[in-house]
Length: 472
Picture 1 (cartoon, helix red, strand yellow):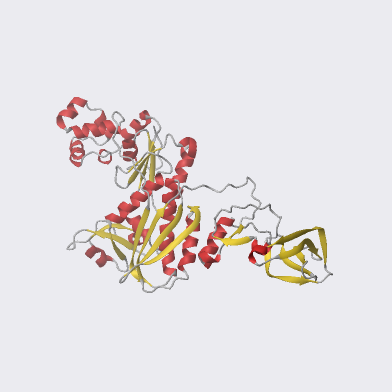
Picture 2 (cartoon, one colour):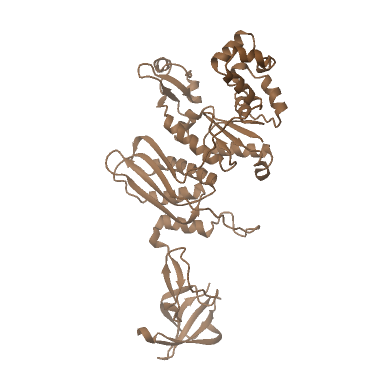
């Protein structure tokens, strides 16, 4: 087995930065008691002002001005870790959150699907970067070794136990996960690296240190297994984002909305499913939420498309009050079936598939503005179809090209010149049961411009040809 550890050293700060559209503004993460607020993390812009983690807020304000303070929120960090576990579940069925700020993945069984480790690692880094997260990734032969090696390495890959032991032997003793009191005791003994501890007799270690120290060393070297609880994805997605200020325009909601839908896309990809219906709650300071329902005719999980659909429904909405928070809930998560595409797609790169165009039209124009057509058992062209909901299956199938795809609202009289008849007439006599009795001879015609139409001659009252529709 091979285990990858994805360490997120700035997870608390990244949790805040990824939700902001001004990442270059000096920002600090603060925590601690009210009497003594301490800087827990700073972004690069704040570091350029001379601010450092561990400073008190009072000292930081005396040193610099013009930086933003954000309270560290453990609940938001936990929600993001759950989202990352759902994302990682796409790559491995064995995903663990055993260590804080880290993901453990068993990837040995995934390499045949996702390619050799260098390509797999590059893909992990790219997707984590798109999620707005900094990372360190290490591959090792057991999960404990992978996690501890990530303390001092990034990009390291040791695929056998002997190589892992050789690298671990050079690790500083305070960075291999030992209890603090044990690490300090080894340092007082003059033991600076793990290799020096590994050279000691096991009996001597057992007499001077607790059994927990020996257990950790054995797990680190792969002599004992670490019991891990593996992640199981939930059946629904829910995310909430506090804006920390009142938003009165749709434009200011687009950045947080895009981030939430990117998270939804990562969650859906991890569960190998799609979403067919989700609800965006616009929470106000007072009064009930404004709910924006977004429904699709088929399951989808592309974050860009989901954002376009939500944006199309958000823009015409009249905000009755400023928005304080956003909440996204998705309960309808059916299986996702990718669309089949030809090896050589003749469409231009700018062209959209019909399914995406259809959903964008529904988002822009409303659900009732885009309808499907269903064939009916009636020979009269004006009665042979009816509007139905998109995606509804018709019980009656027609041969393509047997009837015109575009019927005129009212037939148009044609003069004898300017067109020619194609083939023999098709007689239709029908409608006696509903008072709409017709007797017509239908012809396919072609105009001088090469357009092909569907015209008839009314046998009950002789006269000109009447154009009723066009063929594609």
